[in-house]
Length: 311
Image (cartoon, rainbow, N blue to C red; front, side):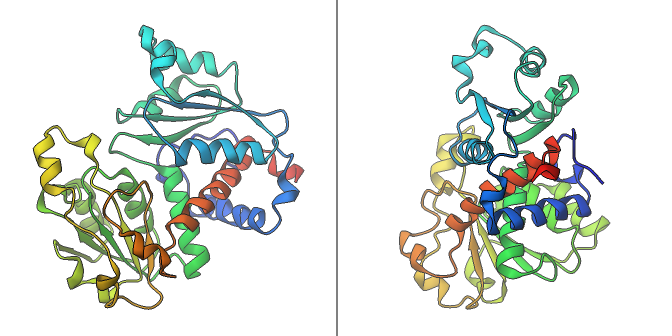
């Protein structure tokens, strides 16, 4: 089993054993990060962000720098030759000569997949439209694995924008590959999980799903609450966004009914959906989740570049 030279466009590109290898290495890095401080010396990461990002872009850069590598790229497509009309195919052909691995975020679904067809270096999908966000899924799974001790037998509730939420799409389809997980989908009717994903979960994987518009009705019976923001940038109609943006706000009062060991997760950034008072609750792990994202990406790139054997 080897991830050397592979692309990561969708979490399904990796087997469960391959995902496990990423988590195992990430846990080793967390315990003794200094051992990995130079394993990517001489390696270059290209960050190609056609869409705004804070955590994903900076965590990738931090991950590579912590391993002794270097970073080049852009955080705004308007300052690159994309503004002149350059295609993704030509951009990635050029970048392949400059870097050893690349992460791409793009507003169009399928753009990283297209780039991978023209690339001679490993491509990582850093998020494509409302489609997939595989490295956020690695981050989420690592967080659950460390804090819950298992990735199976869990009751997981997803709350907020389930229609456009690429983090939700990636995580729910990946968690469905582990045994005995059950899902609760909490959203306004307009932002429900896409039917094709729901159909696959229910009919091909025989997953138990509960759909509701009421968070309070299920909060007492879940192990993980995965909150998401209502994404303004995915709406075509401003009025619809304004009407839905405050559909769910998690506060201390709602948490009175939750399990004492429930995890509150969020891919960030948040807007109004989690009150700041919740940050003090020991169940709130979203900033720890962001921290684990660096280690997940360190492990991923080390394995894709084939440098781990030198550690």
